Length: 178
Image (cartoon, rainbow, N blue to C red):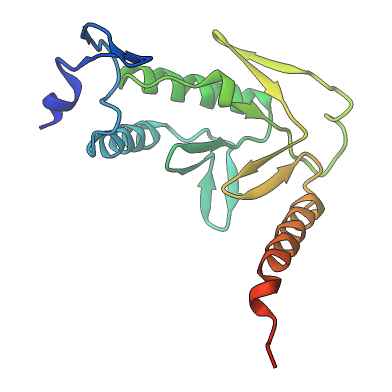
């Protein structure tokens, strides 16, 4: 069944009602195939499980933690740039063996710390291998806004704004008619 999804897949394009000739897909899975997300998840899970823990990863309780993953959202965690670089090189090498690629356009990095020592160094991009990642002050991961100050005020403000919007939209339905 897996071979059906990944081998000898042919596609055609419809442009303004005209169908192009068929061509063979050389990489990737069929879009819309119900097995595609399952195969992707299995491959990504194998990549994540194959990563060796960086020795000085973050400790939470008794657990050593250097990677968070949910579906295709992955966060690499390290105490410094050297740890992140080692982890990135390892994950990129393993992912490549499984035919997976890092999406440079969707990948950003943020330095989260309590001290302000690295914030003075406003490097715009981080270069690793053939990739160049943009540094951001905050980003949303699994619905939570994380920022370099480790301050949750931005996230709380965003949640309050969304709650107010929802309340205003539902207001007409919530009015009690007497």
